[in-house]
Image (cartoon, rainbow, N blue to C red; front, side):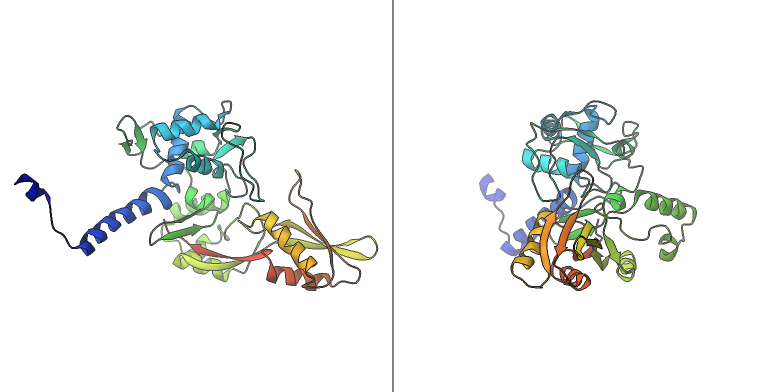
Length: 334
């Protein structure tokens, strides 16, 4: 008799709807989207908190990244070590984060899309600015909850002394929602925040005197302000981001195009390869050679031209047909 009561008949639509609803809520809140208060996804928050607890701070020596990953996985985040290490590396990449939250010794990947060295070779610690996210966390400033096996407490949000969501931006896809928030300049965002605290009724135009627009870690030029304003008003907008280029004279009365900044999230190696393919296939006449001269002094891609080639025309062609110019879509969901 007892068995009969435990079996419930329910329509499949209801079961599917309820289960998928629960799954979606979990994915949206606990995985893919950042919290508006500290700008972090749960895995990032757990990384920072576990490293802070371990005393792995900016004023102490570096520790093996594998130790940090083990701590995070064992205490707070019961998922694969590769996904945790991937998130840790992302927090240290200066071409993806406007203000990196983790410092790393060793190979932490590159703008060419190279992967980082294995975690047994790299070392990491929190960067100085991470301290501003974690400061006073042990003074009952934020709500703490039990971890997955009820042995430790972890924060639901960090105290966050600066608006990290805008400063470092965020990108993520969950079910039904996606987010694409660009990085901003720390000084501009803090100036705007102070102004807003003093003038709660400030308009968008008032705040845009301080925050002119996104400030991408890889530089490049944002074309026009219409898309930026629309994005700040509605949360969605589209801007064109163009590489920083110059045309220079070289020996033999020839010219070269020198690229020193490329758009955010563009893979440099793929970009150089695409430009070289245009040269090989003679899609436009006049390109003699494409070289990647990037070194420790900074990014530099050189497109050497043939004699009497129209440099501006070739540059315009490259803007149109390669990722020298891309459109960036704001989708500010948190």
